[in-house]
Amino acid sequence: MPHIMELVGKTRVVVKDGKVIEVGQPEVEWCPIFAKVRGIQRITPEEVKKNMEFRIRDFGMFTDKRRLELEDFVGFGASEIMMTGLSRGLLDTTVTACEGAGTVISNNPTLVQGMGGRMSGLVETEPIDGIINGITERGGIVLEPSTAKMDPVAGVRKAAELGYKKIAVTVAFAETAKKCRELEAELGLDLIIIGVHVTGLKKEEAQTLLENADITTSCASKYMRDLVKPLAQVGTAVPLFALTQKGKELVIERAKDITSPLLINTMPLPVLPENKQPRELK
Image (cartoon, rainbow, N blue to C red; front, side, top):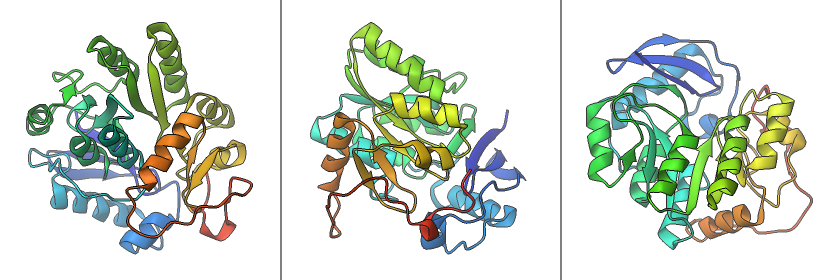
């Protein structure tokens, strides 16, 4: 089974044996993050292929040579926020995804950032021994090493069985967020649910995710921007939104780790300058 990831404009890319074997059509033409960081002014299959090959070459994505200690990619990404939460004791553990391993439970801040800092929308993966071993050596727990299954709900249940209560979990689907909330009530947990990879969500899905998440990225989602009622917002081009008080507290805690100057202000949210948004929103 090959690995499938959606990245850079939600373009579907298939990787097998460390090689890009298929690249789909981008759903988004321009992303302010990749325009700024990688100089990509128009997202094309060729640019996406180059970006995926760069990730494979640079830090071993989808290979046994995967580096699991990586620098911060953005100031307020999901993994960066979880890393800070773990470091400050605001979280007991996290449930996230890593290529070659699937769902991973980890309370190691460096590992959480290493796995997730450069992760895009992982759709499907298969076990890669080098990655699984690297995660295990760093104290991470792979939910199903034999299949690299991705199942955030099962990951939360496993984390609870291990005695963790304050758990952050990343989810890409509204139904997953809803099931996590139900599990939280059933098991008496204290979850931080973080929405990721939300480009292309339908209106009803976006609404359900917003009702169940504490924090969410916006990616290139039209409906997340249209429907969100945030308590706090970070960034204006591809903003991250805090939706609940505990989500807001975690985002503000992360702000303490940002070394560049910060502007903190009060105003009606969201703030979404039209010329800075990804094109076209989906």
